[in-house]
Image 1 (cartoon, one colour):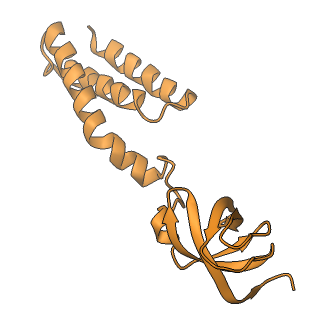
Image 2: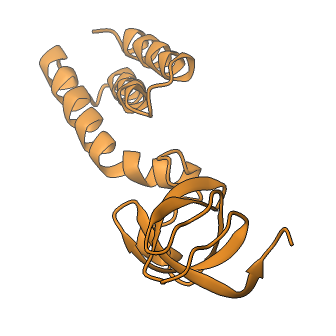
Image 3: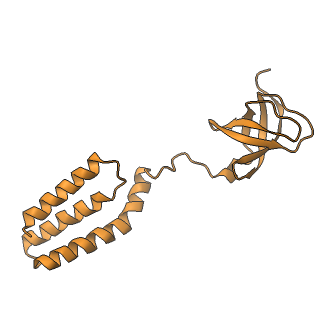
Length: 152
């Protein structure tokens, strides 16, 4: 394949990456095609089979080595601002609804609604501030915070 065709294919692949919400897969194939085109233009790439082999190896290796660091650097992997559930222990949540003694209810923490449970033997009214004692899957175990009424 002619060197300029590799470069053209590479530019088309990179443009395709820009136009689609892919997640940086096609980009590495495009860059590899441009690199093979430049190598072919200088006469280093060799015959067509060697160019295709170089393209395949460069694409797979660059994808494997550089995609994750690129996603982390640009923070595109969806983990921005995400907290591990266990790290919420000790944080304050606000009850959205009344919570019966030892019952199950809803509370807001970090702008999200969570299922909460209490081991306390007293009911807690909606609007009470509570402290997260532990996390069990998607359920927060809470206890009332000292002076924890916020709408009173």
